[in-house]
Length: 352
Image (cartoon, rainbow, N blue to C red; front, side, top):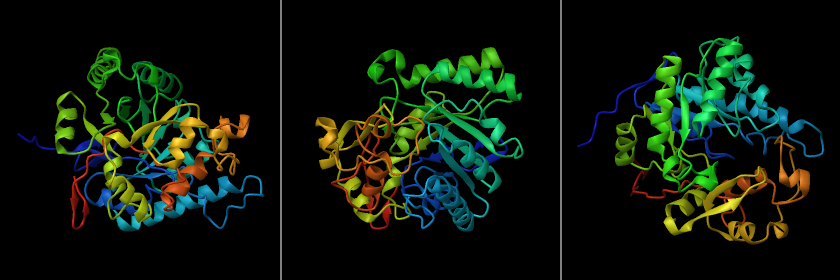
């Protein structure tokens, strides 16, 4: 029997359904998708990585222009999303591993984002960037109990606050980059046990009930009910939103996902030094065998704090690879995907 989806409170913001749209870069989760999800009663998320890549403000030979282009593009996307959904919950996803992470956090808060979601690192100093905007909810992504403890203890000691929610990554199923790959099949790292550990820590040691939002492998209502039943407060859904009419990627990118099956999911090395889940194509095949022959090897934006492409000449330029795919070159770009690629097509696009 299908359960009732109750509203979800994240900080001072209440959304009608406990569903957070995934942050899919570069050019998949933009204003169009985020605004539509917010209008439908979920949390719409703009992925900040690479927004300025195709901006006229970005000049590859001009040092630092990418960061300013990205900042201006984020302002534009937030403005567009708010036009689509004047009263909905709009979030910005920011990667801690990017060099302009503090500026993007400040920009998102100043430009009216309701939530800031972080990934790719521990946002130990995030509250200082949003101190002037107390209504902005801060939501770190974590993959284990230790990360949650470190964030909560640091924030409580340095800023006298705690996260407004936690995105809990199911490393066995989450799309894009994932952590703990050596433990991916270990029962001790099941999402059920992690939710239990986090809930016990928050309740017993901190005396709080912070919303826990699970991401990874959630494809339909059955998955949502299963995750809520194990004690989560909400879910984050990424791959399913990629193929919607409102998705910001090119149609060939969406079609490639719609035609995919479980056997198409592969693990691809990445310039950030972590494995990533993606759909099998020519690019992925080459990256898994010998990334030295991949053409997208020139660092074009110096966007990451640590980058194997820029620092050692290995792997490939992440921005170029992701952007090429989302702009329609589905054979020669990197196509991130979650481990669950079940789809139900309808005449009006993909629906849950």
